[in-house]
Length: 493
Length: 95
Image 1 (cartoon, rainbow over the protein chains, first blue to last red):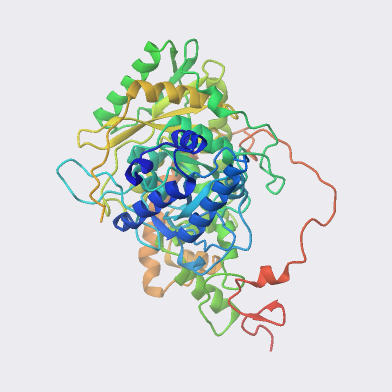
Image 2: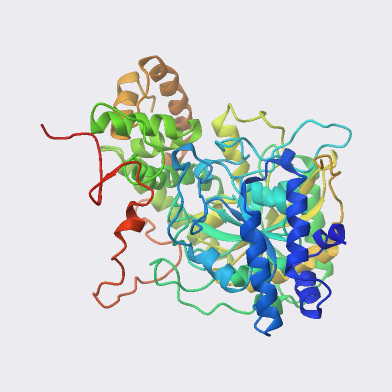
């Protein structure tokens, strides 16, 4: 029974709970057992079994009284970037070790209010800065997938790599992640899962440890598009505690999944044909185009001329905002303190010891581009380029309703392969960053396998606050792709 | 822009992150490599383009100017490495 319970989707588990086929406690215990047996994946920084069982029992009691919410009794994993009241939150960093939030992030509070059960806090790149999970202070989460006939460990992508690994390995029915430059969609692509970044402002950022405030957005990682619709609806919503959270109603995303794309215009941006893209990625993209055309969509070639500048602009804007946001980690109010003779020395020692290599690197870049004399040349220029990127998309929306692209230039790579070359690592996000720069919703759907037997995703990007069209197109792609490949469960102990 | 050792030392000082003298040179070359890649942005013509201030078209909301939070000193101090008499405590800053 317990094996079957971890095979469910959010929607089928919801139906099973409703019918009384099983309880949330049974469902939760099955997932806790799976987590126990998957230590090799290092997907969780902190499993919270006691909390999960208490949540599950409370859910079963609510259901018995007829008060079940949209996610009632569904066990989910939470990226360790969300502050959870009374549960340690590290952001994958040594500098926050021992920090126990005294408040709950709005996103996790919303999920909790919908009845979700928290299984634990998932591994991630330190402060969400990374594309491989290798910058986590707690060691990298590993990808459940391995190349055929080769058991060398692969990265699950990042920064929400632990969340993606947990969902792919059936350790959780769904997970909450965050996406600043691709941190939900890229790991989804690497692990054969569905990952969605909604429009900037759709989910509150309150209580989510800040990386780059003008780009950060929370979103779901799930095993199917319907689940993404359900979980996103439980996370999203207006919150007066985040001044950038937009006060628009959250639609019932599930009803957007009509299975129809006839009459929709799908744009294919030529600039996403990046040099060096492997043939198998190009072929999958062509296949995706064919699927949507066969389903009745109109395929339109579009141009987004400033695409190639999105990534370098991101590597000014994101580090600049990070250097400012991370100024708060000074050894005074929370987390690590390394003693010093003077206050200054205490700050410098705490931050040198508390931040890992990639975080220090980005804080230095951000400090430099914001420093006197360089602000105009770097930060201001990047924000102007961002306007141009947004205008490119606005022009595309005159002609099309959504865009179809690959999610990543390659399938998952090996642990250690790119960690010593920062720019090579940054290039992972070349196809996902533009949506963040323009604040647009995007989703990655597993669409096929590479020659080496690894999952590859296709990305759908839509207009601001039109998650419904994005989900609708993704749902049709998902049906056409019928992706049912599974990783061999090598991690099970 | 190629960063020299002195500039990196200055950035590290501004960022309040201690960097050992022996690490300055390799850090300078690493950061210079990243900046060199970023500097392709300079080729984009941006005359007359407004810098983005918000990804999504929205106006900031106003609210009534009243206290909505507070009276939670112990929660605020709960995670502090060192406190004294209801305050955060730091190494001595004045003689």
